[in-house]
Length: 354
Image 1 (cartoon, rainbow, N blue to C red):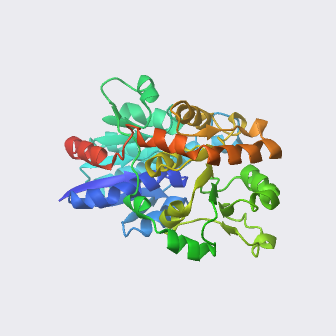
Image 2 (image 1 turned 30 degrees about the vertical axis):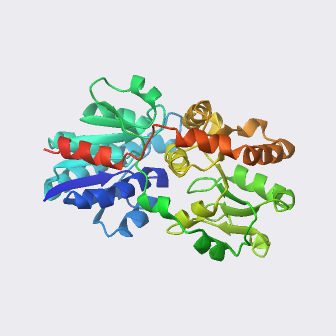
């Protein structure tokens, strides 16, 4: 039986695509291990999958001044040593990385130990962690055709993003009971990423009196962001995080408001869910979500509104207008050539494994 080490972490977007690969990797008879950080979200999510989990030291490499820039390189060096020892112990045939800073020492260690590795880049342009790792990888998978120009020729493979199969088989009635919603009223699903978005949370809650006239709202607001005063609001259900119930919530949803993380929007595409994207601003990120959102808007999959231009009236009108024209976006998504990439990536893993 061949062995594979999966790695990636920091946010759910660096973990859930790996989870999407697990059933097919098991079917292909791979023995699976995972290397992640001590306290990242991947620790919990992967252990729930029954996969052996190994934690290493990791540090963030920042483009801006921060006092931690002086200490984090030592954490990366420690993580590299730990990764080398783990790879020598586990003897994998291949390493697959979904990115995030915890993955950098793992990919470097794989190269040092002469084990081939494959990286998946979700965003339109590679992030810093993957930029550091790409020279040491055998192949680099990507989501967007525009990304190919940023990757080494001969390494780049356009695969799309792995989508968990269970997302495609949700049960509306289970979600309706969970949320206490009535039938025959439109459901709006608001999600600001696994850690939540204060801007989106505040904007939606400020519009609740108007929104609830037309919609029922499921709100994934992020850890520590529940508003207890709203717990008994009819037609509004808030969660810190949605786990196994996510497929049912998606099935119930008629319109989704979301950040523009690449994995999240690829899930919306696979599910053909009309959506409004509010990308993380360039002031708070490297601008990758803006590029992701613009690509989806150009292809007719999404409506985009950036934080800087949002006002309550504009946003409320945009929600109504997008729902009114929902069939236009559904039709465009159904015609998309971007398909579930699990089989393609697993095939590439099998070909590349030594």
